[in-house]
Length: 375
Image (cartoon, rainbow, N blue to C red; front, side, top):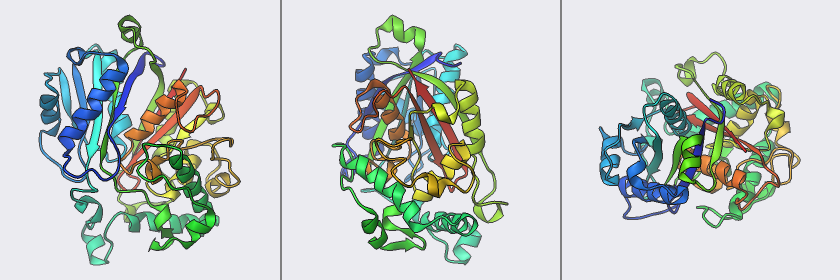
């Protein structure tokens, strides 16, 4: 399937605090913008893949989005793999197109936890969690970060290097929710959320939506799509074990997901020019880089130091700011930035970028999906 399908168009709403907006209108706006970017009429769409809103689950929500778009798609529905959903939906769309089940797919995600409800992020995750006072998402990632520190000597400043890189890129992005660059001293002085994670280690809480148009490369040529970006590879992985039951806290399903994507693309880590790594928390970037094979297990901390992941470094990451700066909405914005990098239109453009890897992750490192795009 290498290169058989393309990302033909991208679109998004504003990111940040959007009072009065619900997820339905946000999805519609992002889809409208993606179709306009592709130069495709709405009536050509015959599949609508929708990520469920994390902050408020609603039965048959995918059909409500299709109805709001004025579409009767052959394939439609809502998917739930947490933050890994977006790339998984793109891969489902690519496979459906290859199987002849649809021709033009909209893939969209919207949420409004900033002005709506944050209950999904604040709740206890189960009986054990409520019994021991483990509420909210940061506590689980703090345990993972602490374990990585104990096993491999990862330091606070190494986590800070991730935040510094992402925030610098976000500061150059006029669409970013948070456009303030920081240094390591700022990171050290930011307040603790759950030890060892500080405020600047944690992603934003943002309203917003983003969408992509997926179609075959052949259809894109015949439709005259101006700037299609070929999908070279994708993969997925997951663990069914919750955090307390996992044999190791410092490994993730990114290992399998990445291996599948690299195999399909016929590429290795050394051939990736730029990466958009899911950064709900800084420790996730270190773990994901390890599990993808950019460095050995336990070396994610040293790998991100010295400007290696900053613009101009060996592997620039999250060039629009990631979840730490562009928007906290889970994952689709990273795919949009991959398209911009391949088109040469990023606000933190990597010169000559010909390949880009994108990671998505859901739950407490339960699910993972990987996408590789290239010219």
